[in-house]
Length: 328
Image 1 (tube, rainbow, N blue to C red):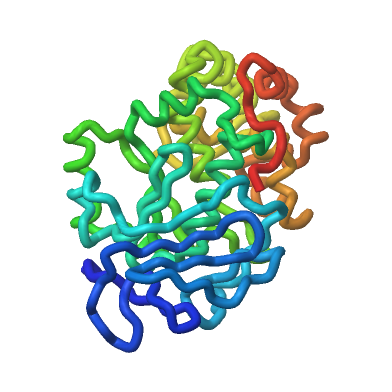
Image 2 (cartoon, one colour):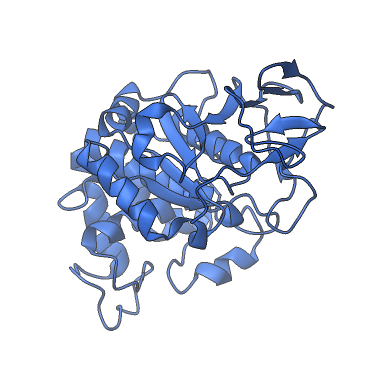
């Protein structure tokens, strides 16, 4: 169990722990990436280290590695994005999760081993989905209200092994007993990896769908009996309450995870369709289409329009105020 904070040093300045082996923890620790390249780290004093390049959010954990590379972003944040220590209202997570960020009040909690740059990237994705026109305000206040009412958020770890521990699930069980909805998992080693698909685009989307869009617009997005679920039945080649032994040959959505029930299938279908329409599936390269073909066939926007006009009609309904461009 890794309950203690992990120390990181940036240009000799304390970040989420202690430098030079010291175990002392500052009363306030903040990492800020705002407009432009400046990074400010605050503990008991404020220091501004060397500016980062304009076009990257650079890992703050030291030397580059395969799991901690420069993360490209296509535009600066609309407002400062901050990683701080975990607030006291998440008491059940104390020690297990030590890092925290918030986007319009929606929390992201992270383990000590999670790269802060990956937390900031997840926050950027969350904000990009909620404020897709980048005007500094959420595009759909009802969806944000649903997310806040659910008291849900993202939980991040360095990897699956960092999260999949009995003490962590017990802690989140306590949170749910206190009125929190389940948190959505995201792993840093699958987030913003150069040359690979960015799974922050998927897991953050799941959070907003489950606790936001499906709640606010049930006739369109509910997990059963909605326009979305009916479109999914067409995409799967029929109505299946569980994974069939063999999908019909005409199906273009054929997820075969038997732990995923019908409602879970709807969540995944919406993610596939929406991110395909936004061009996110092929953003890393044409080989992505082959990688996902066992589960999802129409991997470009044009493919989706030709193959699944029913779901495109839902996605482009202006009443639903869905993101219509990449969140990054």
